[in-house]
Amino acid sequence: MPGKGDDQGYDNNVPYPSGEGSGEFAVAWVRFIGALRRLLAEPPSERALDAFLMLRDAALDALESPGMVANLQVSWSNLHGKKETPNPAHLLLLEVLAFPVALDLKDAEEKASKEPKRSLWKRLLGIGGTVMDSTHDILEDLPWHWKALLKGGKEVVDIFRGE
Image 1 (cartoon, rainbow, N blue to C red):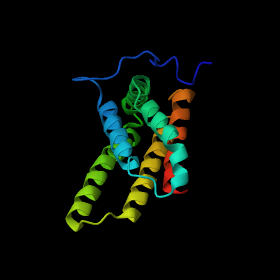
Image 2: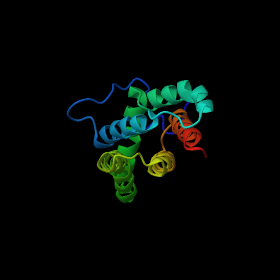
Image 3: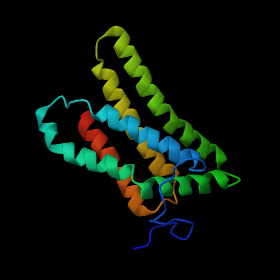
Image 4: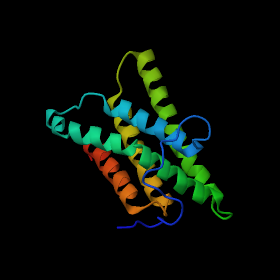
């Protein structure tokens, strides 16, 4: 079934962006998912969540897949290239870029105090979910199957966050 925007340069076989010219959103997204993976790697606080570890890993792998990353870049570039919408595209990029920095700051703060801060961990998971919601909503022309992965990723974050 064709997704919305399939006629706008989307290709399920787009090569993974690498090196120069990979696109700023693609690079930011890969860093975001890497940070989210790092955050979700902390042991679950409840043993029942162990049942969702395979789902967590599969969702993160899908969100970081070459097709997902490439199509996010295409959709973001389409939005950024429109005369009337560069600001929403730029704000989304800033939101995606900020998450890995926030996680690094959390880690530095915990290292300095030598005490894990579970409340900050939960807050960052919530922010990670918000980034996925923003990406889902702002990149309107992203095909439905890629949007479904964003929704699934958000659900995984909610499961581990306790929402």
